[in-house]
Length: 203
Picture 1 (tube, rainbow, N blue to C red):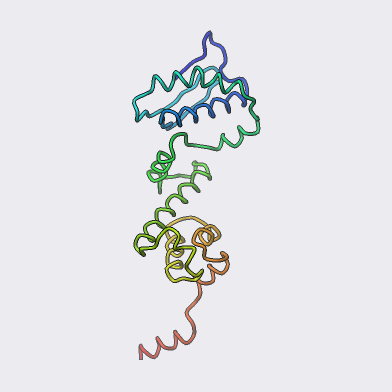
Picture 2: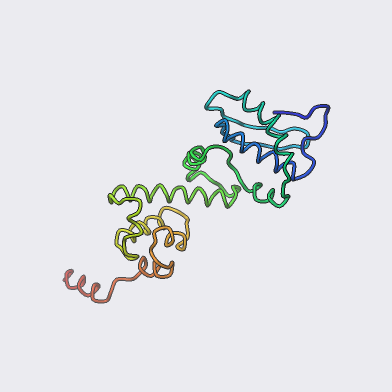
């Protein structure tokens, strides 16, 4: 927790808050800080920060001195605050990936929709990587295969079964044509001839 000197205000406007969050993100890039949570109040702020590199003092010194001074010297667009307010993670990309993996299946009704979507996308990507490894496909193999490749359809069916992602997302990610054509392939009923063959077999 850090408080303003002399009971003054740290944040007067959303521009101030945007400047702080941008500077905090820059500090994470410089130091490897992993921000688990933050709260910006009028005259103080709270950070829940993990420091894998053991450099809390140096990082906070930069954040609270030249970092904020350099940021305030530049103009900020107030509209940008609306976009960053919806963010939820500050830190290296791997930190975000790890958090999403830990959150899989644990998000409730009060979690933001964007967070739920990111969690679902992360889960889908893990499934896709598992399937590519099982099939021994290279990362670029997906684009070389036909849109109706049986393996692609099997991956699509698994994504539909195990994630909440939409058919348009799945079709685009697997390069399986339009979502309508993918839907038809996934849910096509067995042909009458196939059903008749099965009846003959049963007799």
